[in-house]
Image (cartoon, rainbow, N blue to C red; front, side):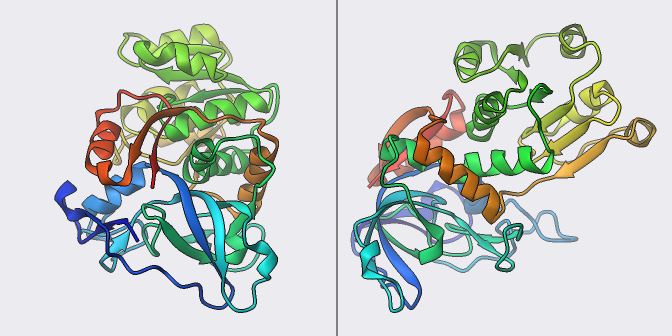
Length: 345
C-alpha cells in the first residue's frame, strides 16, 4: 500500500512517501480500515521533531509518551470504511463507515486516561489502510458529515471535548478560548457555543470573522494592546473558564482575571511551555488549574454522537494527498489556515 513513513526524529526529510509498504493484517479483535481521510495535528509535528522531552531531560528526543520505535506511520485522525476483520470480530462490520478513536487507554472504563496514540505508539492513518482494535472503530455510517469533516474530529475535537468535560463547562457560563483559530481552538469555540456558553475567542484579526462564524460571541485580537483591559470590559466579573491551548505569557497575564472559583484548563503550550504566574492568585481566589490530555472513552463516545447527528460541522481549511505530505505540514506550520488540513489517500 501507499503510506508516509516516519524514519526517525528530525525534519521533514524524515517523512518518506512510499508505495511498497506491506498491507497490515488484522489480528484477533481487530479490524482493517481503508482510510478515506485523515488530518494533521500539532502532535504530528512534535512527534516527528521529538520535542516532548523526558522526565528530567526536557531536551531529550521523544514522543508524547516517551521513546518511539521506527519506522512509524503517523496520523491520529482517521475516517474510513472497515475492509476486513480479524478473528473474533463479526463479519457484519465489514463495509461500515467508521470514525476511529485514536487513543489507547490504561484500562477498560468510561473514564480511563489515554496511554498512547495512533501515529505515535502505533501506526496511524497517513496510509491507505490501518489496523485498529474493533472497539475503537465507531459506526458513523448514517452521519451527514463528509469523510473529510469526520477526519477533523478525533484528535482536535476529542481534545476539546476532554477539556470542556474536565472543566465542567455549563450553559450560560463565559469561556475564553486561546488559540481559537487552530484545530483544537476552533473545536472549543464550536463545542462551547453548542453548550450554550458565551465564547470570547483570542485570535488574530485576519481570522476573527471565521472564528465568529464558528460560534464566538466576541473576538480579541492577540496582536493588539490591552488584551486584559478589553477582556475586563467585556466580562467585568471575569470569565468562568479559560480553555487554553497556547500557554506562554497568557497564563501570567490573564489568570488574575478569572472570577473567584473559576477554572483554567490547559491542553497545549504552543506559545511557551514554561511560564511564571503568581500562586497567590491561584489559592486566594480558589481557582482550579486543570491539565487535560486528549479524551476518555466517554468523551469520545459523546463526540461520536455529535458526528452521527452532524450537529457540529468541522471546517476543512485545505486538502492534500499523501504524496504532498511535506507541503501539507509546511502549510500547517505557516499557520495561515483556520480549521483543519486534511490528507486524502
